Each structure stands twice: as C-alpha cells, then as structure tokens.
Image 1: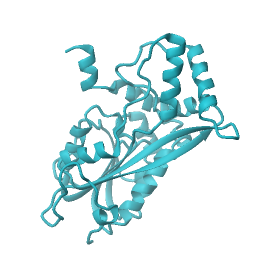
Image 2 (image 1 turned 60 degrees about the vertical axis):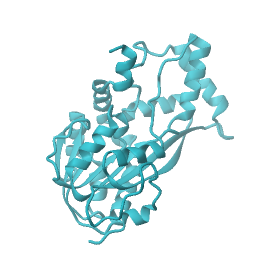
Image 3 (image 1 turned 135 degrees about the horizontal axis):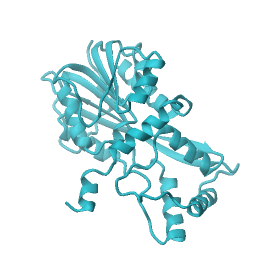
Image 4 (image 1 turned 90 degrees about the vertical axis):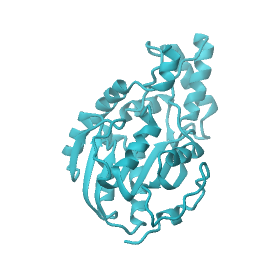
Length: 301
C-alpha cells in the first residue's frame, strides 16, 4: 500500500493523539470550556428523555467532565469512563469522577455486546481513524433501545486558522502541508449513524466563536487541549518560525473584530441515535436524518 493510500485509510497517528492527550492532562481543566459546553448539552438532552439508564459508558472521557455533568439529571445508576490516555484517567480519578474508570481505545471497545443502556462521548471521536467502525461498535455495545449521544467537531471548526496557515505556507515555503484535521459535516455524520445501524438518527450543529488576543493565544490553547496536528500526512519538521509569524499576521488582518481580538470558530455537531428496537418508529430512508430532535428523544420511562 502506498503512503498516500495508507494515510487515506488511517489519517491520524493514534500514538501521537495519545501523547498529545497525555501532555494536556495535568492542566486540562484550564481549557476544558468546549468539553464542558458539550457535556452540559449532552446532559440536557439526556434529561429530556425521562429515562433511567442503568449502565452508561462515557467514551473519550478526558478528565471526567461528562460523567460529573450527566449523573444527576440523566438518572444514571452506573457509569464507566474510558479514555485513550492513562494520564487523563488519572486526572478523572483525581477529580473524584464517579463510577469506574478504564484506559481504552475508542477504536477497539472492550465492551460486551448489548451490555449498555447509554453511550456518550464529548469531543473525542473526531480523532478516530474509522468513525463508521467505532459507531458500529457503539451500536453493538448498546442494549436494544439503548441511546448514543455524542459531540464531535464539525467542518467549520478552525476554518480561519486553516485559511491563514495555508496562505502563510504558500507565501513562505512554496507549498502546503496538512495542518488541520478533516471534520465531518451534519449530512456526513447523519449518514454514518444510519450506516452503523442506529435508528432515528439526529444531527445538529452549534457554532461557537471564541475570541483571542492573538493567534499565539489560540495556538497555546489548542496545545493545552491536546488538539494539535496528529495527521499522518503532516510534515515531520515543525512549522518555521517565520511562517508561523506570517500566519499570525494574516489572522490579525483577516479575522479580527473592531476591538482587535481574533475570532476562532468551533463547530460542535451533536449526534443522537438509538439501538434498534421493535417499539421504535420506522427509520427514515438513508441519508435523510431530518426528524426533529424533540421527537427523537421523546420516550417513556
């Protein structure tokens, strides 16, 4: 298999993803505002189901934000928190996150089939190489009529940074290297939920704009979040200082508000799907995924 073909099959260096997450673990609570936002939204959606979930898994738990957020309103009896990074699991334990905690790869779930009532995931699954395969494993781990609620970064995420890095590299280096991960859009993710066999799929988007004093403050936060470049197709040498400075200048020129602060976009896609059960409505035709969220989440206790 050629290098290009291998990168198409496995776009991400999972060992590097794990190292980035480990490096971020100790100070993650200082930059967890996006994960907290996603966790609060997931908690609200679970509360609206009016269900009691006996057994739940939080996949890609970081330092345990989701488990701490959803345990009360979602009426969960037992929760298992899993993360690729042992360092993140250690932080989740230190933060007194309730429930069991394990180190586990999102791409290879060590979960028995039909053993869970609920699977959640907040801003972790955008780093898996085989998202369709992971969604299939999630569906297989759910009991009939079990629920998956996940949050992933969408295609508008960091579009400003993607633009200025490309422009700066062309100007300074005469070429472009992959720097920003590819992200799914609403339609793509809805189709993946259906392909995985999840019923009543719903995907919607929340565009969050974060403002920074300079591009270098954004770079600092991305590193602290563990969200820096882990593409297999990346150049193995760091971005030149001059190129980085030029990118920061372009960012200031093109994406500054009147007060001089810079905009950084983070699109969060919220995905919901149910493990099939005979009591459910007939699923929509593939690729549609247009039913209202309120209808999809409506269920009896």
